[in-house]
Amino acid sequence: MTPRHRLTVVQVLPALDAGGVERGTLEVGKYLVEHGHRSIVISAGGRLVEQLMREGSEHVQWDIGRKSLWTLRLVPRLRRFLRENRVDILHVRSRLPAWIGYLAWQGMDPKNRPHLVTTVHGPYSVNPYSAVMTRGERVIVISGMIRDYVLKNYPGIDPGRLRLIYRGVDPAAFPYGYRPSQAWLDSWYAKFPQTRGKRLITLPARITRWKGQEDFIELIGRLKPGHPDIHGLIVGEPHPRRRQFLEELKAKVHAFGLDGSITFTGHRSDLREIMALSAIVLSLSREPEAFGRTTVEALSLGVPAIGYNHGGVGEQLAAILPDGAVPVGELDTVETRIKKWLNRPPQIPETQPFTLQRMLENTLNVYLELAQAPSYC
Image (cartoon, rainbow, N blue to C red; front, top):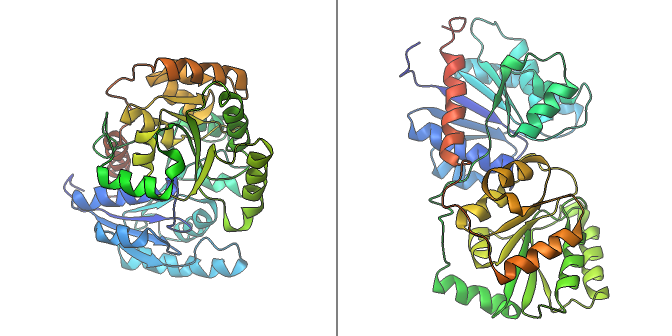
């Protein structure tokens, strides 16, 4: 195989609605197309399919993440698809689709089957079901924390199969010093007039119990008496079947007397503008984030970020803004740091190592490394 060989890469995940896995899938697909390769994504569909196809990838709509024995019927179907499309790389990004992909791949002639890549996106529960994510010929881990998780919990894996590829941010999409347009500001203040003239403290995170919204509400309650000009933003939405927690959070806001001081924005596609408008962005996840992309997005914009010092967020802050890292759950320390930074914001470096370009180059290199292996040619 020559370096100029046109790869056919299939990425498989449950759906294309929102989230870091989904965004990474689109970014890799776009990069493949831009470099002359064929990009195919298999999923149940979702709001991001239109963008995926607009950027040159193909989409095959199968309900491959459905938790049902019926999903196993897709194994022979996928095997035929891989064979007929002469797929070079099968890249699986979630456990149930990974099982479908692995079983299809395992049943093919090793001389003619694609190479198998898995990405471990999080610290899954440790069991045989999750172990499929370590069965790739190359296993991408998205942070040092995830690498350590894999090596600790799956000691049989050959460390030589692991590839540490941090998630990344495009500095052109999150430029340092970015300011929202006047049109965006007009629209924002029309919808959220209570934020006008305020210094915004923002928590961008899916609304679920471990993401830190309860700590955030308590922090705003502590800060408000001495800083009446602050306003808290909770940016994100709950899973449709988890709306009860959102109601609990709203009740807590009311109980703290903060109805006029905290806004729930719901899902927003303009997080860049919201963070650029913010004084400080927080990451308060009680469980370690595998990476936690919003932290590095804020820092890329030049906006100060404070986060609990564990997981991928801790690794980012150690590399970019060490003073932003605080021990998990120590609200006193977070409160002190916010007060200090409201008076004198820290200096954020204009460049940072967690770039999208580096992530994409490293991912394509993994594909090429496998595709050019003698055993494949």
